[in-house]
Length: 499
Ligand code: LFR
Image (cartoon, rainbow, N blue to C red):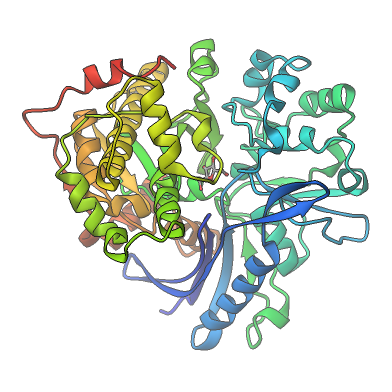
């Protein structure tokens, strides 16, 4: 029987994708129906420049994608996921107040320490379980304290919820993404009113009334306006794991419970799936986060800087007009594979790498400052990035296992980075564990599976959903065994500053 087509909208830092999915004999069969670019937009604001996202272009891309999907398919539901923490503000008339600010903007520099002077880091962690990243929503709001826009705001909607609102009128906060704000009680899965009270008292930021009701993934939040899906009637918008990393983790093709995952793209999100948050002091100082996952789970993980280092290096080289043959990514990766291993390693967690800008220059400066051999060629820089990322993967997996008391016997790498063979191989070597790479589009799959279950077309919990993932992508998966004679990663790790 044809159950119809679910449509996943998956927004990443460099592109948006609209993916159609159908259940066929226990498999989710997918097809990308539309892809559109995304990226930071630097705009003058008074006497400085602020990085934004073009949310109207994103909305336009979604609407176009829906139309493509509906052309010769019967669309039965839609779900949206994106990166986390960023938001739009609506005024009392429901109008958007300014463009969504990009989390890589520097407006939050120094803000965490200002916040901790009033709301101690220890008590915030005990309540929210969230790692400290300068871009967490709570810090973005404090950086906007006193602004005209915040003063006029009546509603705050995270990016996927904002786009969903424009499609349906619904005003909700999906809980996996809400868990990245720093305003959520991680144990209760409700807004942390003591935190919002503290923000009001200490910074005059009255966020509490801006926050909409929370919903869990699988909730039908509204009906897509007819004008966007002509010919279809009453198509529900389903809240999925609207944080892209939550959808990616839901689609890890794990067949046991003792796995670690790396959702590998612009970021490497490295960690474990747990039933309960880990809120210990050791966990806080290691800057591990407890983000919320599907079905009551906790995504216990660290943000490792990820392939952003490589993407931004490529962009720098392209802008400086290097010869075309130098800039072929696969040729560069092949050249990097021939560079001696672990010659130069850097601490990828250094916040100096967070903003856009000349990445090779920052990498060279970091190597020089740490007394490492300075990488000279492009291939040496790429090798330094991949060796250092593998080291970051190793450190995070080991620490997650230690801090949570869980064993890990396999590492699943999902997302675009799972196609980077050298990185997968180095990760197997560094962790001493087998790596299973794929699927590449795990986030869209996780998004689609939650829709199918919400519509009653699939039963069961995460193990059953993952069974469908395995059936759907088995051919795509690649396995990397740790080599028997391994490089000296202990010595390389000792060269990094202690976290
Ligand atoms: C990955 C991701 C990370 C989050 C970062 C910023 O796309 O969602 O999980 O920390 O983007 O929002």
